[in-house]
Each structure stands twice: as C-alpha cells, then as structure tokens.
Length: 509
Image 1 (cartoon, helix red, strand yellow):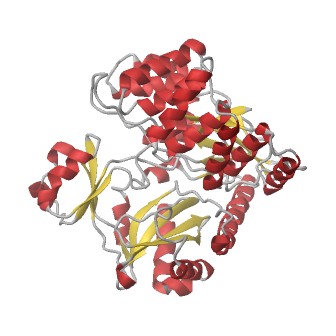
Image 2 (cartoon, rainbow, N blue to C red):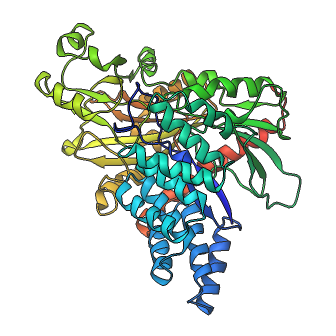
Image 3 (spheres, rainbow, N blue to C red):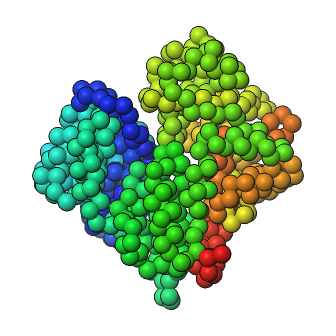
C-alpha cells in the first residue's frame, strides 16, 4: 500500500494566538489516505467484484473495492464499502484512515475524530494516524493537536506531513519555532509518480502542487494509459535542483487565495524548464475573487463588486461609502463548498455575521440575485479547456447558496430534465449572447484549464459567481437517473487529454 496526500481546504496564517485559542483547520492536503496498489479503472472494479463473488468474506478485497470506488469518484458507495470493511474488521487500519479522511474532507470532523482516535488506539505505532488526528483536532484543541503531531514525529521524525502540519499549527499560533518544522518538512523534494499502464512511450507530465491545498484534482482528467504524471510539491523544490523528466508542465495550483504563496515557486520551476507550460501561475494569480470583478468589462457579463477588507473596518457606514448595498455577502478567503460564507440581509445583521466568520480579513461581495422561474436559483458550471467552452452541470435550488451536492437534483425529474437539456445543447439552452460572453470570459482568464460558476440575469447576462482553475470534474455515480451526465464529462476528459498531448509534442511558445 502507498500513502498519498489529498488537496482541499486551507489553513490561512492568523494573528498571534495562544495554544488555548482556536486555530484554523489544516489544509486537506495533509489528510492522509491508505491507497491500494492497482489500476484505477472500471475493469479493475469488475475484477474485484468477481473475486468477491467467489470469496465474499475477503476483507482485503472489500478494502481494495472501497479504495477503488473512492478513486473513481463514487463517494457514497465508497463510504458504504469502508463501513462494510469495518463491520467485518473494526480495527482495519486502512478503512479507519480512509473513512475518517472522507468525513474530514466533508467537514464532518466529529466523525473523523472518532475514527482517527480509534486508529491511534489500536495502531499506536502508525505515525500517520496521529497526523490525521492532529489535523482534525487543530481547529478546536490546538494543544491536543500539537501532542498528536509530536507523537507522529516521535514515531517517524522525517515524516514530511507531520512536520508540515505542526509548522502550520505553530504559524497560526504565532510561534517562531514553526520555521524549524517547515524546513524539516521540505528537506528533500516531495515527488510522486503515478504508475503508467500504457504500452507505448508515455506523455511525461510534471504536475505542480502546493502543500497548502487549492490544487486542481487532475486524476479524472489524465488517462494513465497515455500519461505518466509526476507530482511535485513546489514548496519542497529548491532553485537549481533538477526537475523530474517531463514533456510538459501542468500547474495544478489553482486557488490564488488559498495557495497564493505557492505560485511564486511554481513560476520559478516553470522558468527552469524549456518544456511547454499549462496554466501560467501569473494568470492563476489574477483569479482571486477580488480580481474577478474585472470581468465586468465584458459585454453581457456581470461580476460582483468584491473587496478584501480588514474585519475591523467592516461597518455599515464604511461599506456604504465603498458602494456596497444590502443584502451582501461575507466570506472568509480560502474556503469553498459554502463554508464560512454568509448572506447579510441588513445593516443590523452585520455584527452577528462578522462574529460567525473566522479570519482577520474578509471578502465583501455584492449580492447577485439569480432567481429565475419558480423562484429557484440556477447555478451553472462550465469549463474552459484550451479555449473551448464545455458544460459541466446545472444545480437548481430555492436558496441563495447553491451547490450540486445539496441541490434537489436526484429526486426532481423536472430539474434533471432541465440539466440534461443544458448539457446536450448548451448554446440552445443559454442563448447565443450568454455563450459569446462565456467565450470572452475564457479569453480574459488566459488559462488553459479553468471554469466558471454562473447564473443568468433576467436579461440573459452571465452573472459570475466565481471563475478559477480549481474546478474539478467527477464522473456521476451508478444511479441511472444521472446517466445523461456522462457524455458531458467524457467530452471534457477527451479535450483535456488532447490538450496535454498536443502541448507535450510542441515547443514552448
């Protein structure tokens, strides 16, 4: 078995705190999984299912199946499969770690903590169990988190993830000792190459990642029968160090707010290579939420006024002086999936909203009313791949905060039919004006791979919610109600693979 890091939420540096105060959560790049060796394919899943039919009690096969389901993006089925493993073997280390990490990434921290504590109790020599426990403890109990990280380092002093987790905890608490652990974490380049399953010469792709998270998940985009992907954590690279062999570089650091500090070393790495580069770091830097307001200059596009302001300066009078009107939105930078995100209806609601959000600086965002037919909000997602515009999904919900996972799509036939119409003929569904605006947004971003979440105004204009390079794709699960979504995802995967292959074969322009 091999251990990998997953990317996701960020810990942002904060003002000096004591260990009795609340720290920010660590980035999900620190959440360690136990990954079964093997090919991540439908054929592999079918093979495991066949083996389980012959030997249904084989716990190792059950665990391999759960891992594979998770790697394939079948998250609900993967959770159930891990629970099935634990029902048969309650102390199974891999299932405890992976199910705990799924809960952690879903912000279900109490459930994650229970599983990690159980893992440390039954596997006290496993350093990574203590790393994950430290991650989940950090926001609410920094002292206990520090003890967990330190225990991991007693077991494995060179554990890069434990050193980095402790460094981030101490940085958030204003402790100067943090730099010692950061240096230990990145004492050597952190590089991982995924197995290549093809028969011919592979496209060798160097994928740049940040330990802070905010990375595009590229596993669904890259065909390991054509691409040999080598991931490099940019914080671990030193100027002048040799780079792994590569035909092209893909900068997968996509969140300029969460991992903005990692874009500078990514630029230096790209400059040290003569090979083509996808997603230039300087273009990613211009996708901060407070920079996306520039898209307002595009005809047919409405991007909200957005400003990053110090918490102490956010008052009703100060906001009015800057041109903001209520209702408006407040958001802590570096978070996604609606976490730490509030709608403020009136000046009187402002103090309560401020009290619920962490961070010394907050984003103030003008509210865009995207209600349409029936009073529902429709949030569309499109991806830009090598200049092309591809539909991803449509989420329909009654509230202002809309995400596909929480929208009523699974049980509403009319909503799914509307999404199917959007996916099958985007231009007919949105109109030529909106498509022209989306193409202009793609050109303005100057990114090889990016995406936009948007709504439609009453006049057909594109209402931009966010536009950046972190928008991943996931294959729909086996529920046949969502079979119509598969062709749209396949088109994106084909476009991304074609782009990577073509760039790898050409010199950098």
